[in-house]
Length: 134
Image 1 (cartoon, rainbow, N blue to C red):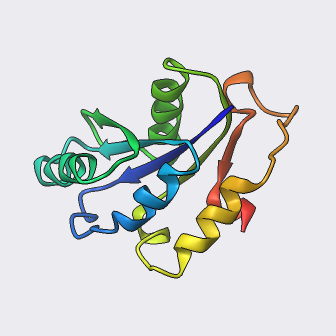
Image 2: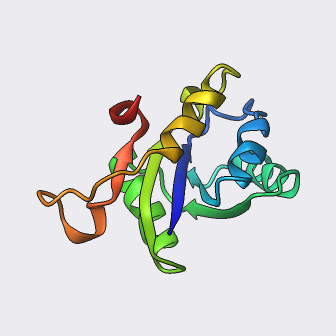
């Protein structure tokens, strides 16, 4: 089964240029959903450049209005789940992966077998914050 990664970008995340992580995750069969939280034009341009420069399967989702992180993540989950079934979906913000030393941590996380939780709604049973898994 595949795994998914949701990265929620706000208007302040325009300087993100770490495409190394996307290319490392390409070998792990990870689908990446980039969420433009607030429909910022500069962020959309950045996400489009990231998609063009990466080998990974990347979806771009733009939310018309800025939402709290939890609602932006739910929108990303719905976008991913509409395409395929996922063993696990991990979400984060760009600040958590902007340093090169985090790349190995992401590879380790995606190599783990994560169990479904029974105490969550069906759609969110396979959703994990990156902070939970480090």
